[in-house]
Amino acid sequence: MKLTLNVWRQASANRAGSFVTYEVSGITPDMSFLEMLDVLNEDLLTKGEAPVAFEHDCREGICGSCGFLVNGKAHGGHKGTTICQLAMRFFKDGDSLTLEPWRAKAFPVIRDLVVDRSSFDRIIQSGGFITVPTGSAPNANAILVPKENSDTAFDAAACIGCGACVAACPNASAMLFTSAKITHLNVLPQGQPQRDQRSLNMVAAMKEEMFGTCTNHGECEAVCPKEIPLEFIGKMNRDLARAVFKRRREPIPVSPLVQEAMQK
Amino acid sequence: MAETAGAEKVHSGAQAPRAFTSNPLITLWSTVIGKKIVMAVTGAVLVGFVIAHMVGNLKIFEGADAINTYAHFLRVVGMPELGYGQLLWIVRSVLLLSVILHIIAAWQLTLMNRAARPVDYKIRANQESTWASRTMRWGGVVLLVFIIFHILHFTMGVVGFQPGQWQDLAVYQNVVAGFSLWPVSAFYIIAMAALCLHLDHGIWSGIQTLGWNTQRNQSKIRMASRVIAVIVFLGFISVPVSVLAGWLK
Image (cartoon, rainbow over all chains, first blue to last red; front, side, top):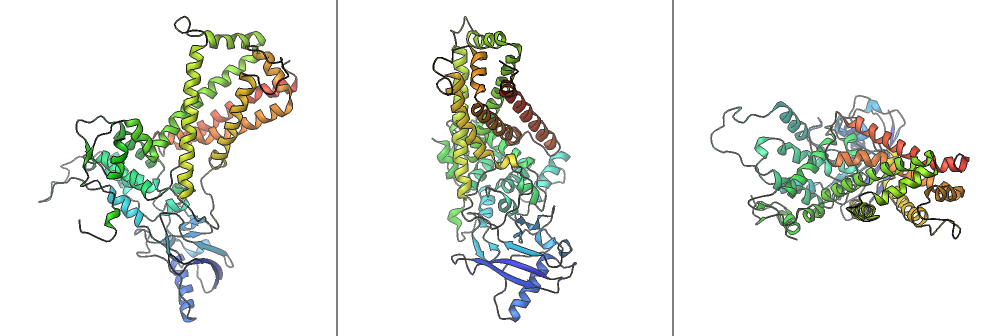
């Protein structure tokens, strides 16, 4: 199989980038998309050119490292698939593919197809801790969790933080990601003590990192390799409303970002 | 926690002083999701209004007396506890406040969304969004222009009529005279098409924002939203179409 690739090349974060066209041949249908790029890179190295930089680690669709747009679709646009798991059999000989990195203010391009996603880490950090007993291992089933809730938490925890939701969103919103992280802990008994401050802090962090907001297009849901549903965004919205409207006997600890707003 | 590079950017509340919510509504407005909730709630008020308005309009097919009496009823309802037209003004105030909040929230969120992607894609393919969802912003602008025109036109009679042609509470005669001008009817129908698109995405979107959507009922909510949008569209355009066709004289 022979392909024409139109790849975004950018030497570093503060250099201007542009699309460069490459021809790649000898691609077999059982190769993964990243293996196809490996072939291209070997070719480039032999010619003495800089290889195309892209992020990858497990290549089994569970680490969340890889991801870029193929012809305008995050991870290539196949349901529940990361780009590393996308097989070349979905492409035809002679196809022309445009590869572009995630584009968002919060995801600056570091090099070629690699973006800095540490804004996601900071959203997770803003969620803070959960109070759990330390010391000897607790009895299994000491805290009972309804099946439905444990399933919901598990579905939410499936988020690998690849950033495809932000990339596909017309508003570059991180609400699907944040909602998965919030829902994961907010539906479990272990997440209850810090539930409200977690909701307030993480939503404020999302804004601070310059992500956009949800307009319910559903583009994120369509490209999410872990098929996180839009439903979780609704759950997050309710958790935020709950945190804001709850009448309290004692003030709760919140990040300075939230505090400013709460004391107006 | 170990001090790492960039640790000053952590927004954790772990060591932060504690805070009460002094005014929950202000706190809600300060969050991005709060603005979405404000849009959903004000949107629900406005959806309720357009449905009631559409049903009220259909009284025109019962004849001049029916709709003119209905217009009078809207002003005397609530009497004697309230004065003439006072309940109507209360409703109008709520609607005006809803429209203002809806627009301010939309404006602020749109600016944030634009700022969130300073460099656009060369190619970005839409996969799940609809034409309705992508035209919300400009459709909203069309509706704002229409609402201003509509109030100046039928409610106040200052545009679109010959001097002395518009008469207060003579709804039937005003509507027939107003819609007899085809550009007025055409603009009305275009604006109602924009409303139809706005509702198709807006009703479902509001329900989703308020957290009543689940994976199981998502397709039903989207269908219900579309059905309401189409019914409202057909109900509203039935009046100018009937006037232009000569069924209402």
